[in-house]
Image (cartoon, rainbow, N blue to C red; front, side):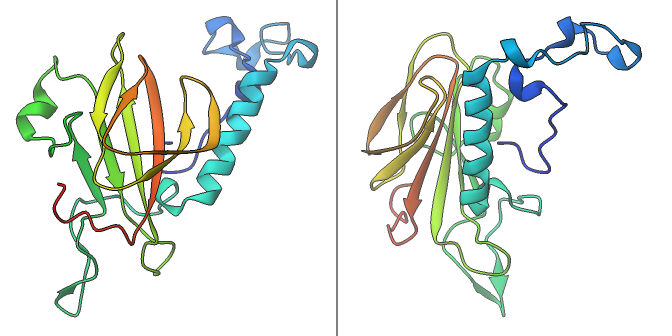
Length: 187
């Protein structure tokens, strides 16, 4: 889900680890051979789901670096939110101090960008819980569609969520909201 071009080494999508050898280019043995018979089918399916998710939502493949600023055209804001907004689990803006706090667990980012020069039609919220325990996240106002939950490896469940929503331990969630929901009062 990182910005830029996804980089997969042949076999990554199968769970091929090269036994941790990061210098395996000169190996012509089982370290580098792809074992198709014992590939991790669930991981392969998950990687395929990530590729489909990236294709479906422009915010996950935006070609420019996010700057956190509102885009302007002719001196007027083109929309009411910045291209990316970082949030604490409590739903508040993530402060500079929180970025530096090693005990601050969990964060979310809301990305609002369109494809090419078109205006955004959806908001994408990425929720990250690196903690070994579940965390509750206060979602920005309105209904959100859960399109990925890494805790269950499920895509497009059609589950609609709002308010406080739990994030399983060590998980990432991707939620989508149509842009017609007004968020002015929630952040």
